[in-house]
Length: 471
Image: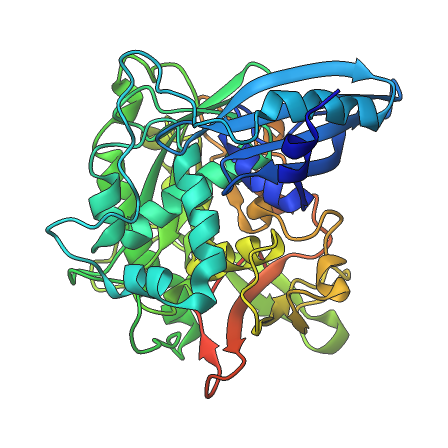
């Protein structure tokens, strides 16, 4: 039997909280065909574990995680099957070793730098917002667990995250969470590209890049920048040109010629941080540039429909050719992966949903949803409390990391990316001359803002805007 004192140290936690811890597992919180039956932790979040239920066999198993001295989670025990959850819990209680010191580092392993220990470069306003406001404590917890789950962050990760490259590093953490959530193996064995993802034999190398302004700090806290009023400017002007220069700059580095990348799928992952607020409205310029098609509306009344108008050049001041995916010289680029959800708002919601809820904090997400009614061209407004049942019911498993992730497939790709490699993303592809999409989500957020309110504080604060997904 388990020592009663140790059992009393073990407390139940939510499934979502354990899933954040389990981002550190090789394939994240994915245990198919089993699923999490109950989850626990002990100490000061230094020991955790869960009981899994396999519906096919009708049996239970246990999985125990413990932190190392560098705070990273490692799996220390996996046991079963058991006929009852009580038997699985007895084993889990022993394996968790509540009250024991943290696990040692493996021989030769370097201790990971602390994310919150600041250095001589100082800190950015975004980092200060994250670490010094109680309203962003949920984001701090979610970001911290994502950082600890990174397989091998480079030496500049922490100082970059604390200063002017906060957004770029946050994007890497977001991608890691998206990939691990979907059961992908994520490796960082080489300096570049940033990630190698793998699932059931399919692989893809991914290099993350952000579209920034020419100022030292871009896309962070500051005056909100609205979308250009002129629709052509939004689609084919400055925003599209910025995407073009960002992508072409990365492609000039010829990642596909590296020995460890040759002959495999390669994608660029892109996020837009060039202005505060730009991520809400700039997304539609990306497919315009990639496919050389401008989305136009023709017809009147019930006969209105969206059509793709071919364009040869962008209308920005540099006249960059449109249609990156039309150029056979870039057939080595399998796809462009895009998201507008690599924001403090997203991490704050995911931490909040996992159970880190400061007393008095309210989150309201307001935005527009894609209307999948045939022929519909206008979005659906929504405004819901993140803590509400109505918000959770928008998606089968509640809000997920990957719901705002998009994959734009290159029709000329020498090494295409299988859709099943990143199943939770919205996939855009060309068929019979049209650009179509495939997604598992009935409700896709086109754009949104998450508003925060703390009881006892005057007014309502707005986080950085979050997410655009396809229209």
